[in-house]
Image (cartoon, rainbow over the protein chains, first blue to last red):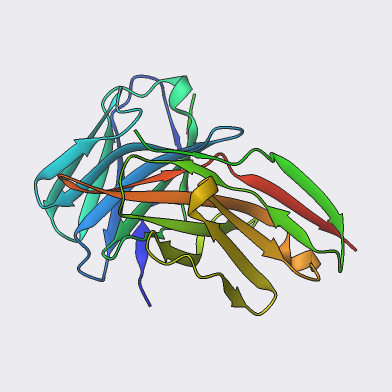
Length: 110
Length: 116
């Protein structure tokens, strides 16, 4: 079974902090994604990566950056956390036009 | 740009009723994939089905069935004889192959509640 692991299930950070959300997959997938999920808005794509060191902006990249130094790991970075970034963050990896998701990180910025 | 619309925000049914979740998509590509995911209260998204744009054959898996109609750009999902355990948020998604990897776009989701 594909396993996608996010480093934290729940996280509380202060406004202005730099926040790292880590995601690791164990199936050698090329594509990895970061989404945020908010009530009534579904899943919105923040960034995705189709290869090591390659990244593409999604629909809502503002306030975020990403890093993919190794194929199995895709990090989402909040450069200076703000309260409007309080959300559920979901990481996914895919190979054949489909995605497998991690358990999600519920981030609260206070 | 690709777009997925799930017009039903919430659906509530009584156990054993059949229920259909609607999904309409927009894409300019001729080659694409469509998906359904289930998100139970635990939060993790569970993959249910993938369908490519060249395969319009409907699919049945137990109590689940999917109706793909390219002419109306729809990919609807039916649960027959619903059960309480079917209560979840269901997402429809579309994947296009871009010049740099494949991007997966989701609809807003439909909250299904099955009451005993």
